[in-house]
Image 1 (cartoon, rainbow, N blue to C red):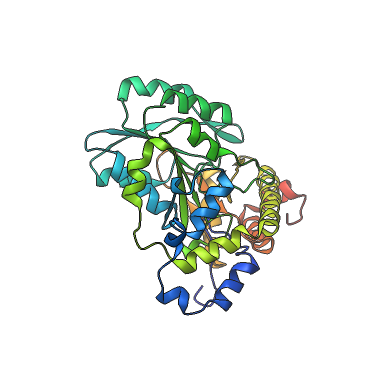
Image 2 (image 1 turned 90 degrees about the vertical axis):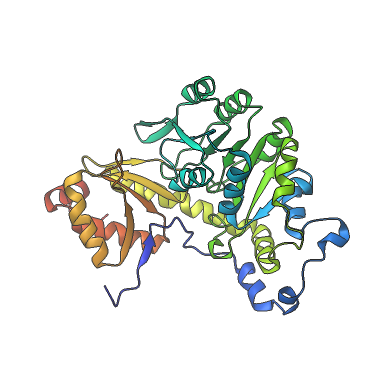
Length: 358
């Protein structure tokens, strides 16, 4: 193991890497980007990136908040909107960080149900809407696509939630948006209709710039106080902005990435569905959730670790036997499937594959 460079299938990073234009920004960067603050204020703007993002989403530049990834804006929003003793509603299977932030301000986290269905998970929207009367929440947080289940809210269900909670801050975490080829992106327009809506996006997932730590929020007019709370008088990281702008200029490259990942997901679906007792859940993100027969997990873990292939196996109640597998490159995914084939009990593996490695 010491001589093996691990492949991290547990971090939800984009292992295809950023567009060549992003690397070119690094090669051509000059010292001025480092020792000068932005001059965007001379044109009445916060930053070049917020101007560009505003145009993409069809909203005024002032309604774009930049941050240190989604994580930064998410934390700011909970600290700003959630008062001590008030309730925040979050999905029942979601990122642990949501609860951790609420705890920091003395908030009360209440989970609304995600329901396991054959091959997918679904939000129980009726239950979420009914929880308004029981819990009188201070804010609502929805992740779509959701981590670790990979499912998304339909537009119809999202509209129902926004109408029901029109007078409360609703945070729509779309960190994994864009990984479905050709997906329509008109979500920014919802902030015109619902002034208490905050939509979160990041350059970490599709754009493969996790190390740059750049994200943004789109806010409705009702959240102007939050915009002022988040404002940075001296601007943002200019090099990170340049990298993000280069990514936005590389739409063909990232369309190809989303198509590759869609193909990768289908290969994993076919691979795992060939094994009796194994269930894989369809995902709109750069990971899949798999439910394994419990008796095969020790052998899988041992084989994967010996090969330096790191997968997230869950031990939390309700998710024992589940694993979240981030997508690698096509070659890396093939290595992972080969390792699992080799580790699976021989009789089951031969039956599932006809004696050939999938």
